[in-house]
Length: 609
Ligand code: AGP
Image (cartoon, rainbow, N blue to C red; front, side, top):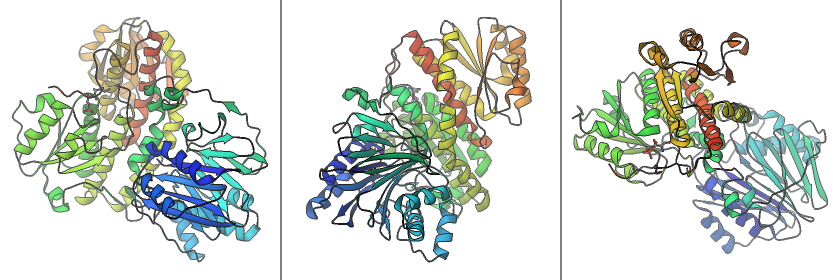
């Protein structure tokens, strides 16, 4: 996830942009850059590392001008470096971008063949070149941006300047956030409201496929085809805490909605579609060591343990190494058989969980190799490991884990692909396909999040339920466990997750008219069997809330509520199915009036055994 800021008006742009970037630094901080139109010429400054490095550059080489754009980056395509930092320039065009251009490789190749040379490894640079090419052809900045953007596929929020039309700032959005701030004779654009809140409270929220053209005289909004769009100005009355929660009622809800961005960040810079390989920057284990591994243990607690259970499916399938999953507090007391060819993977959002840390030390003491999947940089567990895969989900404040969980699933996916390629159990072509599937995730999750209002309505029917049963099968069984845990944690309703096929061996006795049963039923190899289990529930009067990507028609009359989700590769479906479960738990808890972000008796980081 990156942050972008743009300004056009009468004030000096550099301090406004740098201040805005500082408020967006939570979105990324591996490099930053700024471009200002100075006397009709674009002047850019960029720096690797934190924003303070860029600020220092601006002190050393002062910029003046009343129109400019800036960016704070979290690498997706291309490593963090000054060369890959935004803004990117082609001819007289300069661009900052947040998002991922999915077809950048084919566009880059086509541009190369037409004589374009590239300086960076980023997907963003191709946008600058596409606009430059269109501008040369039509001589009109706005038309050039519009035409160029119809060529790209994926997610973007962009702000663009053009040397030949120095009094115009253009912004556009598809899939990534972009907000406009309207002042008197001045306009701001930014990835998030806090970047502009000290200048204006009048905001316009761009929709996907919209383009905004700003001059000091006014703003014009249209779609990519050039049809005018009427936009409403909304006055934002947030206090500082609300600004921190991004306008959401709870951190948990904000974090649920942040998942498209968080997952894009977990993927950032790690996909190498060209070669069909995965790049993991701190893996800490040589290829020979990874090839020698004959056993993998995945150890974690709570939600992270549920991620571990999904990880077993992925690793065994893609790298054919046998995996055992353990709850950390159990692992160290069972004298596990660990050798120097064992790999122990610890999963921990916080990186400070005492049980997980103790399990790490147990495995390390037996000379096993240690890899951690963690969200908190430089946490204890990360520091004591041989290698780390950071999830880059951004801070998770809500005690109930949401975005940390789904990004753990993505990190496990990346590792499984990496191991599969290293051990030659996965072809470059299959890995490339898997990478393409992964890069569609942020967009698919945006679709799933559209269920929010429907789920809020459904929640009213179940707020008085005493117990819940969650059923799933295969890689969806851990999601059933996670759905039940979410509900327990924040609504205090008793809930159990069960493998759907196991229901008849006991839990079926619980079913009556009072029992809501959440059935996770993606259309896969076990779909028909899960549907049979669902019918068994219905036959006994149980209420069924189904989550499925199968067509509505086939489930008609068989469920009380259907939460229809899009289709992804089966390995990725657990990520999609977990999101409606987070929302269901959230809305039931809100209706019950519990303290959603800080539920009773729970702590974000459990540092006692
Ligand atoms: C998740 O909603 C819980 N708060 C809890 O189960 C948590 O996942 C567990 O305590 C492990 O925490 P960790 O990932 O920070 O190690």
